[in-house]
Amino acid sequence: MIPSFLRVAVGIIFGFGSPALQAQEVIELPSRDTHIEPAFEEVYRVGSVDGADWEVFSRVSAVGFSQSGDLYVMDDQGGRIVVMSREGEFVREFGRLGDGPGEFAASTNTAIGFTVLRDGRTVVFDAGHSAFQVFAPHGEFERSVRMPGNSLYVIRTLAPARDGQNVITTSVGAFDMGGPADGPERSFRPVYRLVLTGDEAVQDTVIEAWRPSGDPDGFGPPLVAGALPDGSLVYTDSSAYAIKVATRNGELTRVLTRAFRPEPVTDAIRDGEIERLLAENEADASSRNDRFGDAFAELGRRRIRNMEFYHEVPVVRTLRTSWEGTIWVQRRGDEPASDGPIDLLTPDGGYIGTYVAGTTEMPDAFGPDGLAAFIERDEFDVSSVVVRRLPTGRR
Image (cartoon, rainbow, N blue to C red; front, side, top):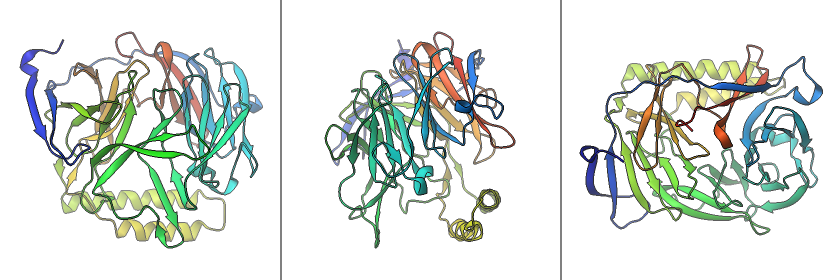
């Protein structure tokens, strides 16, 4: 139960998924952090240059769990998916680079989206083929589901919808030779449910999230969404601390707030962020092992120097939903672009507590029975995955 003094009377808020006014409950969570310890039990870790062939990863871009607790690792530069049991033992690997059924285009493998459905079917979006590759629970190639039209699509983030067969995303980008192929500019940012039951994917816009004017790159308020066990959705789309809970059809029912305010972007903050991004750009360019490094670096410099900035630094950096429905919300840190504390919330507006900044990373995937996977990279950029078990009450 949420104390009555923390519940705000039902409010009327504009622009949450419909041109019409919508009513929803606004819940003010405590303004002071209650610190909790990340008492995670390490279950296993995989990925080593000295390990067996199957656990020498080129680059781990994403991970996911099935209902059985098996862990699926997307080694995107290796063009394969590696599966471990809930004890960390090798089960199988499948997929490869190529142009045939169930293969991933080598030229675009860094733009692959990936997720695991509860029954163990794996969904991979391959930008090179503008299609989803769907694999059966035991790794056999099941079918390909193409995106509509002849555009080039890029989809980097996928999450499983809780209907067991479709996915949700906030990152569908479509381009043709003349530029964006999405039609007239929208007044909102969509959260899509991608229906993958036919030969062609259907983009079902379930949420029309708020869109900042000009779509600023610098400190632009993130749009991040996840699914809850009952099929409802949770998302953040503004610079404020406002975590929104909607039905599976996108109707906003609840907003969870905390009394943190966005920081105004000053010239000093803007210049510091440009400097940070330029340094990051040079590091990325120097790490490339091809002849396009200099061109890549110059394109990055131009983009960064011409960036438009939002007028505030958003409070929330990202969010994720656990297998059992806990909402993990990462706030900004002391520096404008740094990761900060992580709040744990319940969908009905309960505040569980906060992990102090630096005591844990945000899990990259959640599984059953409190399993959580974290992607780690060492100083030589070698990827590994650590699976830990979350304590009861924080899952």
